[in-house]
Length: 365
Image 1 (cartoon, rainbow, N blue to C red):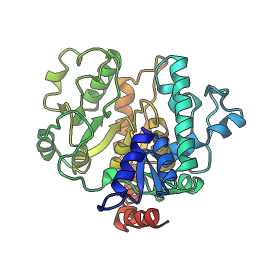
Image 2 (image 1 turned 60 degrees about the vertical axis):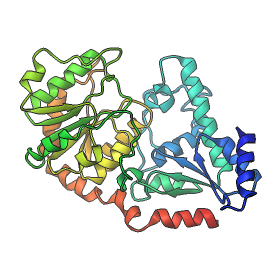
Image 3 (image 1 turned 135 degrees about the vertical axis):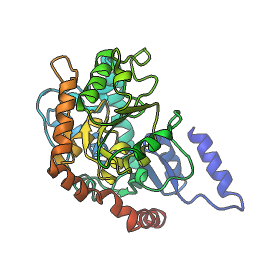
Image 4 (image 1 turned 30 degrees about the vertical axis):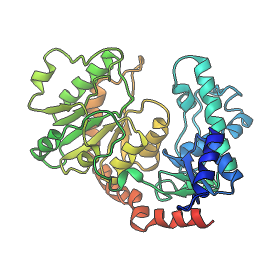
């Protein structure tokens, strides 16, 4: 790939057309930075998740030095929670990103080495790292990493046409259904494109929503249960036919911006997190893997715009817990006040033209 990329750049810059003046690549493509540097072209790595997650990966050598993990990424103090800096997410060692990839130690070790390599490579060779966040959302994390430029939140800006990063068709009828609901009454439930449940958890969620006696809009992918199709409790769909709506995929930005939404049960993916905060919607956090546990900490510990859902001794979130936390979240005026206060945070950089200003910095040095 390096040779082909160099050949392509030489070909373009050797023509009479516009020249390549900057190389932008995903942060995992370190070889692209090497080629651009060799040709004297400024480079930028793109990081799509939170700034804190990148900062955490860059601190892996320090975590080893401090005795928090060994050279294989294995936690040495499995139950000691910590923060890298005040006003950054609380980290639980068993939720390290690389430990969420499969159950095999060899797979987790491979992911640990990969994450350590690509992020250190980008820090060493890229002129800048562009990240999908803002200094208002993550002030501490942004100040602790050099050579970074915030360009987010990308997911909260206007989108072009019907471009989408998934393979499911959005169901527009859910917006029509929301139009029929009372303001701030609907529980929106969506877990992104990767979360999977076992049958017990799938059914507990269904029954928990039923117990709330509140209207709900639930996104259920066809592959959300491990190895099986959707398996609802007996008679569930009939009982909730007037209470809820179930769709395969939803236009999430439009849904979260709808006046009928009361709260968001979410996997806490970074885009979903930004979209919920941008629309002033409080969260019930249900993280699944990778950076989602850190995003949960932002929501619960730092921004204080949501609650955690607790698991039982078998790791299942029970229906009673879902009902209790929904009632607590939507009934607490403090959350309503707090989400309004935080709603502007992701939008400041968009309004003041941070993206344009930082693009000029990148191109001019």
